[in-house]
Image (cartoon, rainbow, N blue to C red):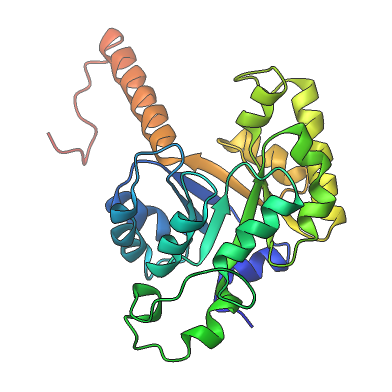
Length: 268
Protein backbone atom coordinates (compact mmCIF):
# COMPACT_ATOMS: atom_id res chain seq x y z
CA UNK A 1 0.00 0.00 0.00
CA UNK A 2 1.45 3.35 -1.09
CA UNK A 3 1.32 6.59 0.89
CA UNK A 4 1.51 8.51 -2.39
CA UNK A 5 -2.12 9.37 -3.25
CA UNK A 6 -1.23 10.42 -6.79
CA UNK A 7 0.38 7.04 -7.49
CA UNK A 8 -2.68 5.30 -6.02
CA UNK A 9 -4.97 7.43 -8.18
CA UNK A 10 -3.04 6.53 -11.32
CA UNK A 11 -3.25 2.84 -10.48
CA UNK A 12 -7.01 3.19 -9.99
CA UNK A 13 -7.29 5.13 -13.28
CA UNK A 14 -9.06 8.03 -11.59
CA UNK A 15 -9.44 11.47 -13.17
CA UNK A 16 -6.62 13.62 -11.77
CA UNK A 17 -6.41 17.29 -12.88
CA UNK A 18 -3.21 19.17 -12.17
CA UNK A 19 -1.24 22.36 -12.79
CA UNK A 20 2.03 22.84 -14.69
CA UNK A 21 4.36 25.18 -12.80
CA UNK A 22 7.28 26.95 -14.48
CA UNK A 23 7.63 30.21 -12.54
CA UNK A 24 10.08 28.64 -10.04
CA UNK A 25 8.21 30.17 -7.12
CA UNK A 26 7.59 28.47 -3.75
CA UNK A 27 4.65 30.84 -3.26
CA UNK A 28 3.04 29.76 -6.52
CA UNK A 29 3.72 26.13 -5.63
CA UNK A 30 2.07 26.61 -2.24
CA UNK A 31 -1.01 28.24 -3.78
CA UNK A 32 -1.33 25.52 -6.43
CA UNK A 33 -0.71 22.64 -4.02
CA UNK A 34 -3.51 23.86 -1.75
CA UNK A 35 -5.93 24.52 -4.61
CA UNK A 36 -7.58 21.11 -4.65
CA UNK A 37 -5.56 19.86 -7.63
CA UNK A 38 -4.30 16.29 -7.45
CA UNK A 39 -0.78 17.09 -8.68
CA UNK A 40 1.52 19.93 -9.65
CA UNK A 41 4.38 19.58 -12.10
CA UNK A 42 7.58 21.38 -11.10
CA UNK A 43 9.37 21.81 -14.40
CA UNK A 44 13.13 21.82 -14.80
CA UNK A 45 13.23 21.09 -18.53
CA UNK A 46 11.61 24.25 -19.91
CA UNK A 47 11.87 26.45 -16.82
CA UNK A 48 14.92 28.00 -15.10
CA UNK A 49 14.61 25.77 -12.03
CA UNK A 50 17.87 24.36 -10.76
CA UNK A 51 18.41 21.73 -8.09
CA UNK A 52 19.00 24.23 -5.27
CA UNK A 53 15.57 25.77 -5.91
CA UNK A 54 13.62 22.52 -5.59
CA UNK A 55 13.68 21.87 -1.79
CA UNK A 56 11.83 25.12 -1.04
CA UNK A 57 9.18 24.25 -3.61
CA UNK A 58 8.81 20.78 -2.10
CA UNK A 59 8.42 22.35 1.34
CA UNK A 60 5.83 24.76 -0.06
CA UNK A 61 3.81 21.84 -1.39
CA UNK A 62 3.82 20.06 1.99
CA UNK A 63 0.38 19.92 3.57
CA UNK A 64 -1.43 20.56 0.31
CA UNK A 65 -3.43 17.90 -1.45
CA UNK A 66 -1.38 18.03 -4.65
CA UNK A 67 1.55 15.67 -5.19
CA UNK A 68 4.64 17.52 -6.49
CA UNK A 69 5.88 15.80 -9.64
CA UNK A 70 9.31 16.93 -10.88
CA UNK A 71 10.38 16.83 -14.51
CA UNK A 72 14.20 16.89 -14.64
CA UNK A 73 15.99 18.94 -17.30
CA UNK A 74 16.71 15.71 -19.18
CA UNK A 75 16.54 12.01 -18.47
CA UNK A 76 19.84 11.32 -16.74
CA UNK A 77 21.08 9.29 -13.78
CA UNK A 78 22.92 11.85 -11.63
CA UNK A 79 20.21 14.52 -11.57
CA UNK A 80 17.65 11.79 -10.83
CA UNK A 81 19.68 10.62 -7.82
CA UNK A 82 19.98 14.13 -6.48
CA UNK A 83 16.26 14.82 -6.89
CA UNK A 84 15.40 11.61 -5.05
CA UNK A 85 17.82 12.50 -2.25
CA UNK A 86 16.10 15.86 -1.64
CA UNK A 87 12.75 14.10 -1.27
CA UNK A 88 11.19 13.94 -4.73
CA UNK A 89 9.16 10.75 -5.01
CA UNK A 90 7.22 11.41 -8.26
CA UNK A 91 9.23 11.97 -11.43
CA UNK A 92 8.34 12.60 -15.07
CA UNK A 93 11.13 11.62 -17.46
CA UNK A 94 11.12 13.50 -20.78
CA UNK A 95 11.64 12.07 -24.28
CA UNK A 96 11.55 8.34 -23.57
CA UNK A 97 11.67 6.60 -26.93
CA UNK A 98 11.65 2.87 -26.17
CA UNK A 99 11.50 0.21 -23.48
CA UNK A 100 15.27 0.20 -22.90
CA UNK A 101 15.22 3.92 -22.09
CA UNK A 102 12.23 3.42 -19.78
CA UNK A 103 13.94 0.56 -17.95
CA UNK A 104 17.09 2.62 -17.54
CA UNK A 105 15.09 5.52 -16.07
CA UNK A 106 13.40 3.19 -13.59
CA UNK A 107 16.79 1.75 -12.59
CA UNK A 108 17.99 5.22 -11.59
CA UNK A 109 15.20 5.41 -8.99
CA UNK A 110 15.96 2.09 -7.22
CA UNK A 111 18.82 1.00 -5.00
CA UNK A 112 20.72 -2.21 -5.87
CA UNK A 113 19.93 -4.97 -6.56
CA UNK A 114 16.82 -3.51 -8.22
CA UNK A 115 18.57 -0.52 -9.74
CA UNK A 116 21.68 1.65 -9.69
CA UNK A 117 20.76 4.51 -7.34
CA UNK A 118 23.68 5.57 -5.21
CA UNK A 119 23.25 5.43 -1.44
CA UNK A 120 23.68 8.20 1.12
CA UNK A 121 22.49 7.77 4.68
CA UNK A 122 21.72 11.36 5.70
CA UNK A 123 19.44 12.99 3.14
CA UNK A 124 16.23 14.98 3.15
CA UNK A 125 14.35 11.98 1.68
CA UNK A 126 14.89 9.96 4.89
CA UNK A 127 14.49 12.98 7.20
CA UNK A 128 18.26 13.22 7.51
CA UNK A 129 18.59 9.68 8.80
CA UNK A 130 15.71 9.80 11.25
CA UNK A 131 13.44 7.59 9.10
CA UNK A 132 15.12 4.29 9.84
CA UNK A 133 12.90 2.17 7.57
CA UNK A 134 13.46 4.31 4.47
CA UNK A 135 15.44 1.67 2.59
CA UNK A 136 12.65 -0.85 3.15
CA UNK A 137 9.73 1.43 2.25
CA UNK A 138 10.89 4.09 -0.25
CA UNK A 139 10.00 2.14 -3.40
CA UNK A 140 6.31 1.79 -2.56
CA UNK A 141 5.86 5.57 -2.86
CA UNK A 142 7.97 6.13 -5.98
CA UNK A 143 5.93 7.18 -8.99
CA UNK A 144 7.65 7.02 -12.38
CA UNK A 145 6.00 8.68 -15.37
CA UNK A 146 7.62 8.58 -18.80
CA UNK A 147 6.91 10.99 -21.62
CA UNK A 148 6.30 9.86 -25.21
CA UNK A 149 6.82 12.71 -27.64
CA UNK A 150 7.33 11.21 -31.11
CA UNK A 151 5.53 8.72 -33.38
CA UNK A 152 8.42 6.31 -32.75
CA UNK A 153 7.80 6.42 -29.01
CA UNK A 154 4.05 5.99 -29.51
CA UNK A 155 4.69 2.89 -31.61
CA UNK A 156 6.76 1.52 -28.70
CA UNK A 157 4.13 2.16 -26.02
CA UNK A 158 3.22 -1.53 -25.49
CA UNK A 159 6.84 -2.35 -24.64
CA UNK A 160 7.39 0.86 -22.64
CA UNK A 161 4.26 0.30 -20.55
CA UNK A 162 5.32 -3.27 -19.82
CA UNK A 163 8.51 -2.11 -18.06
CA UNK A 164 8.24 -2.88 -14.35
CA UNK A 165 8.23 0.34 -12.35
CA UNK A 166 6.59 2.52 -15.02
CA UNK A 167 3.42 3.85 -13.39
CA UNK A 168 2.00 5.99 -16.20
CA UNK A 169 2.73 7.49 -19.60
CA UNK A 170 2.43 11.18 -20.45
CA UNK A 171 1.95 12.42 -24.01
CA UNK A 172 3.93 15.54 -24.90
CA UNK A 173 1.68 17.11 -27.55
CA UNK A 174 3.95 20.01 -28.46
CA UNK A 175 7.02 17.93 -29.27
CA UNK A 176 4.82 15.29 -30.89
CA UNK A 177 3.46 17.93 -33.26
CA UNK A 178 6.98 19.21 -33.97
CA UNK A 179 8.27 15.71 -34.70
CA UNK A 180 5.45 15.35 -37.25
CA UNK A 181 6.33 18.59 -39.05
CA UNK A 182 3.54 20.57 -37.36
CA UNK A 183 5.44 22.89 -35.03
CA UNK A 184 2.96 24.66 -32.74
CA UNK A 185 -0.04 22.98 -34.38
CA UNK A 186 -1.26 20.42 -31.85
CA UNK A 187 -4.76 20.67 -33.36
CA UNK A 188 -3.57 19.18 -36.66
CA UNK A 189 -5.78 16.13 -37.45
CA UNK A 190 -2.79 13.81 -37.84
CA UNK A 191 -1.35 14.92 -34.49
CA UNK A 192 -4.70 14.37 -32.79
CA UNK A 193 -4.91 10.94 -34.40
CA UNK A 194 -1.51 10.07 -32.91
CA UNK A 195 -2.71 11.24 -29.50
CA UNK A 196 -5.71 8.94 -29.79
CA UNK A 197 -3.47 6.08 -30.87
CA UNK A 198 -1.20 6.68 -27.88
CA UNK A 199 -4.14 6.85 -25.48
CA UNK A 200 -5.56 3.57 -26.76
CA UNK A 201 -2.17 1.86 -26.52
CA UNK A 202 -1.55 2.99 -22.94
CA UNK A 203 -5.01 1.89 -21.84
CA UNK A 204 -4.61 -1.45 -23.60
CA UNK A 205 -1.50 -1.93 -21.46
CA UNK A 206 -3.53 -1.21 -18.31
CA UNK A 207 -1.82 2.07 -17.44
CA UNK A 208 -3.01 5.65 -16.95
CA UNK A 209 -2.22 8.29 -19.56
CA UNK A 210 -1.69 12.04 -19.17
CA UNK A 211 -1.35 15.09 -21.40
CA UNK A 212 -1.05 18.87 -21.46
CA UNK A 213 -4.49 20.32 -22.12
CA UNK A 214 -4.64 23.96 -21.06
CA UNK A 215 -8.09 25.51 -20.77
CA UNK A 216 -11.59 24.24 -20.22
CA UNK A 217 -12.22 23.11 -23.80
CA UNK A 218 -9.04 21.07 -24.09
CA UNK A 219 -9.50 19.60 -20.62
CA UNK A 220 -13.05 18.47 -21.39
CA UNK A 221 -12.01 17.04 -24.75
CA UNK A 222 -9.12 15.01 -23.31
CA UNK A 223 -11.14 13.81 -20.33
CA UNK A 224 -13.90 12.73 -22.72
CA UNK A 225 -11.24 10.78 -24.64
CA UNK A 226 -10.45 8.87 -21.43
CA UNK A 227 -7.17 10.59 -20.56
CA UNK A 228 -6.86 10.40 -16.78
CA UNK A 229 -4.40 13.10 -15.72
CA UNK A 230 -4.50 16.39 -17.58
CA UNK A 231 -2.43 19.49 -16.92
CA UNK A 232 -5.38 21.88 -17.09
CA UNK A 233 -3.33 25.09 -16.90
CA UNK A 234 0.12 26.48 -16.26
CA UNK A 235 1.03 29.20 -13.80
CA UNK A 236 2.54 31.54 -16.42
CA UNK A 237 -0.30 30.76 -18.83
CA UNK A 238 -2.91 31.64 -16.22
CA UNK A 239 -1.21 34.96 -15.42
CA UNK A 240 -0.92 35.95 -19.08
CA UNK A 241 -4.53 34.97 -19.79
CA UNK A 242 -6.00 36.63 -16.69
CA UNK A 243 -3.97 39.82 -16.91
CA UNK A 244 -4.79 40.25 -20.58
CA UNK A 245 -8.49 39.71 -20.02
CA UNK A 246 -8.61 42.13 -17.08
CA UNK A 247 -6.82 44.83 -19.08
CA UNK A 248 -9.15 44.36 -22.03
CA UNK A 249 -12.13 44.71 -19.71
CA UNK A 250 -10.69 47.80 -18.02
CA UNK A 251 -9.98 49.49 -21.36
CA UNK A 252 -13.44 48.67 -22.66
CA UNK A 253 -14.85 50.28 -19.51
CA UNK A 254 -12.72 53.38 -20.16
CA UNK A 255 -14.14 53.66 -23.66
CA UNK A 256 -17.71 53.15 -22.44
CA UNK A 257 -17.98 55.03 -19.10
CA UNK A 258 -21.30 54.72 -17.31
CA UNK A 259 -20.78 57.58 -14.91
CA UNK A 260 -22.31 55.53 -12.12
CA UNK A 261 -19.22 55.54 -9.88
CA UNK A 262 -18.08 52.60 -7.74
CA UNK A 263 -20.53 49.83 -7.08
CA UNK A 264 -21.90 49.58 -3.55
CA UNK A 265 -19.36 47.87 -1.33
CA UNK A 266 -16.39 48.72 -3.55
CA UNK A 267 -13.52 50.52 -1.87
CA UNK A 268 -12.18 53.61 -3.58
